[in-house]
Length: 136
Length: 119
Image 1 (tube, each protein chain N blue to C red):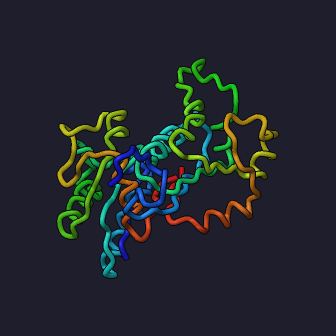
Image 2 (image 1 turned 90 degrees about the vertical axis):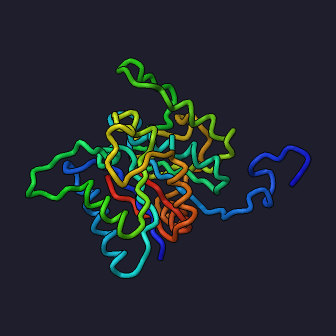
Image 3 (image 1 turned 60 degrees about the horizontal axis):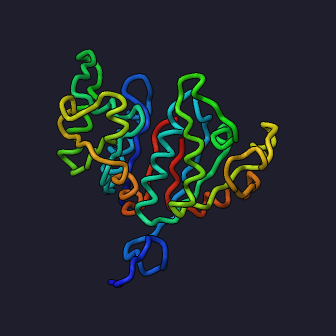
């Protein structure tokens, strides 16, 4: 189509297919079960499909993006840094539930990535506007 | 309506795969289409051909394989989640195929609804 190199997401014409609003809802702590890690794998793959990707962090899922994790001490891989690479995949819509953050005594400064902090009600509204919601 | 289904839990230990099966069966009976079922997390264990529940119990792998054959349902097991848990071509049950996570995103794009079964 174009002689210059087009990167996915550079313009609206690049994706001839359907673009849906995807939301990946992270509800679980980063370790203790594999859900968090395997959701992240889903998110990374979704980037290849030029979809409108959103990430939500609620409940213990908020712990996934807390700074200064050192899970190697319990034999687990530290994948929290991968969240910082997401903007390189054009995944920049990250939302954290305010109530969940406060309940855990955390603030935005404790998080490893830039996020938008929104209320539970706003989160519900946002979720309602999605085409595909995948959660774990 | 065209459905995609995501199964997130393994067999027998958890109800998720049974609920997914009952949902798919009911949807098909109502004239809907289930185009693909994607098995992820411990859900990959549902596709192990070595599963052998007592004879008077439901045979989960066979139920899915029969549905796939009769109603053209694509049963896809995630390759990465499968490898982690020792699910490979050599122990893959009939009716299932192994592929990538892209198959899940694809059905999300193509289907009218994606239903998740699991915790």
